[in-house]
Image (cartoon, rainbow, N blue to C red):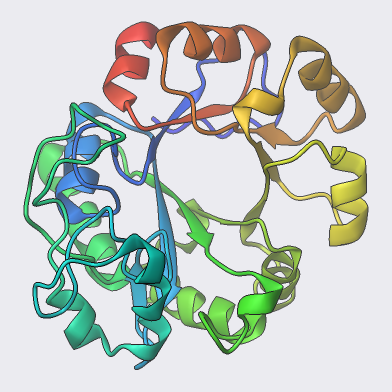
Length: 286
């Protein structure tokens, strides 16, 4: 069962968020990774989306073909120095679909199983995961969907925020998962647009530096339902201060991969833990 308490406590079981599915075990942001994470028992699937030339919502962390994930459209190796030239916003999805990922070992994840697959559409992921939850007889999964956006990437690597959000919202509504979804972004403009377009949608501001939360929320213009900082930025003091200042906010740090760090986050009473190894976290919680 999903845990949706807005006030984390030390006695609460944190949600298990499978980062890009289960990146430590299977190729990131792919159907095999998402479906395996569901079978493991994650509460929430975390994934990233970008937009193709033909306005399709594609599940991918980078808005270009990452050299570490696989070859280009014609099977050619991608030079990491020039990978941004393979801009997904300039490629139709049919071309993106041809690019194999997961065939080669990932240097950062030695336990990752080699599985030749592809970058799916968000629509495809939602259909497959919803059907798999029913087949497994498990509770419906939640979705944490990060929109990859930066101000200097507008009209280059992605559409402007309002249109980006609209494209994603249309997929969530069509799949009837809006109420189980949180939109994530480092880009405050994405969350501002989402709040205007869908006031009831849960939002998460991501953070990767030491800027205090109160400054980030002031810049955002409101306090989001969830705050997602880099785990390395946290301490017992910062977690306590955040809970005191914003008692209703849900703290879900990323990306926590070792059992010792997971145990530390559990002790702090976070609402959820984002991890590349949900199997480790689930075993710890069990």
